[in-house]
Length: 279
Ligand SMILES: NC(=O)c1ccc[n+]([C@@H]2O[C@H](COP(=O)([O-])OP(=O)(O)OC[C@H]3O[C@@H](n4cnc5c(N)ncnc54)[C@H](OP(=O)(O)O)[C@@H]3O)[C@@H](O)[C@H]2O)c1
Picture 1 (cartoon, rainbow, N blue to C red):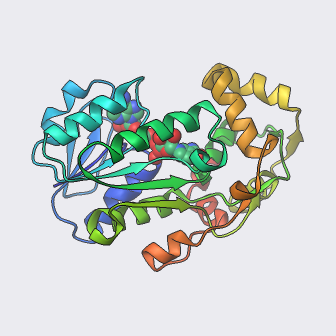
Picture 2 (cartoon, rainbow, N blue to C red):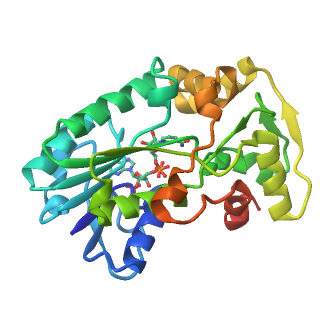
């Protein structure tokens, strides 16, 4: 039995679909709200809250492999890893972040590193995935684009090798079903660098209309983001999207292709697949 956490999220949705399609065996998708979740046929929905490890008993029962999206509720990761070990889970595939290696001084990166260590010391086999920024972060612009407002960009021309979440899912699928990925840490990027301005242009292309861009200062962008993300995370996001990038964050890695056998998907593909969110 494989348990996918975050199964209604950007990575998890694609992962349950891939695991089902490749006949990976019995599958469960974790959600807090099964009434809202819709999983493909053959995926058993299971209720649980990662912020409350005691609620995960039914979800973890009989599970051998766990796909773990961390950081859902403060202090929850240690309890979740412990609950998994006690339930007899043999292998954990963990979503971490490239910022663990590029920006270890930032709070969210430090938290990911703590969780990596918890999983590595947690008594199960493990695989750690360190993706760069997700293409799906562009959904942050969806309300503005739907409302025909300009997209406010502080670092419009910084190109980063943004990754399609389905590529993280493809690597996770391989890690869950092929033993050779145990004990490995994978840095994951998209196939090329793409700037925020180019991302907006790709979305505009998918919509078939112009989408205006407005350059804003870091301070203005921080004011936009802080109410949703908090001060510290807003600052971290601004650093890693242009304010304080470094060579390692800019580098394109070919890990997706090496692990899955398929090249990583370009940003415009994500834009075409998700155009409806911007209409
Ligand atoms: N975005 C980036 O650029 C980036 C870069 C590197 C790493 N990361 C990491 O990637 C992860 C996010 O992955 P994602 O984008 O696939 O996730 P996501 O789409 O943001 O959401 C994941 C799912 O988690 C579930 N969830 C939220 N709180 C929960 C809780 N307390 N208990 C159980 N389930 C809960 C929600 O499902 P239900 O509502 O159905 O319960 C949600 O659909 C984070 O750990 C983040 O740090 C992100």
